[in-house]
Image 1 (spheres, one colour):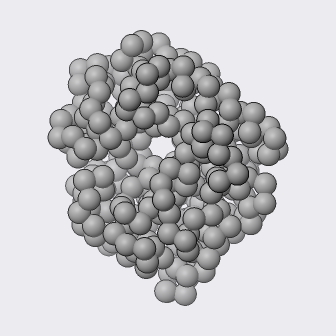
Image 2 (cartoon, rainbow, N blue to C red):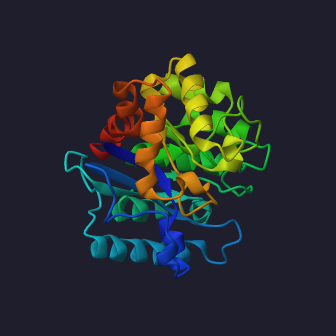
Length: 290
């Protein structure tokens, strides 16, 4: 099987010097093709966030070299490879020209916030929208071909972001209608993403899914998205290395068990192939070829 994961926080784990505890396995993975988005995650209280970003970029690049796992620099025809994202690009408030550094480093997408508010936008725990500076940042992202990740925006800011961004997705989210957590996306967000040609990466985090029976809850999430006509907009964003996972789905190799469980529940392999890989490839082809 092929697998495309829209979100893992492995660079942060490397920075903590906890490589051995990583959920992600780039060497002994069981996939015929494997694409992994590596999120350069920054907490809200980082003292020097751009310095932390630079340190983690260097760490993940060295790690990819050790694993002989290439960074996707052009299109996705190369097959397996990593893609960089930034989770919480709050440092753009200091200088929007940092976007050029991100693009040169291979970053393809970014979120403006983590959970708190900053000078760009309101985070998942807030209620505000996107600030004038945040809107300016999105305009420059559009010009550079960078995609906006709405997973960590407030509900209001997420809707504004979908409207403003040329390319937009939610890398690691769950569904508010199935579990009303502040961090989850409402139907209005999902339908707006569909209209914009975006994708939704269903996360594996039990807290957002609503329970430890994650296979069943992921199945229910897919069924709900299908009911909204989003067969071509569903993907996965595990949140490996960024959240405490259920024992049944806490390692890369266990993703094959998820595929089998969903197929046994009645989902056709043609649909699962889209969800596990092809929908994300189709979306990123538009970004990588920009």
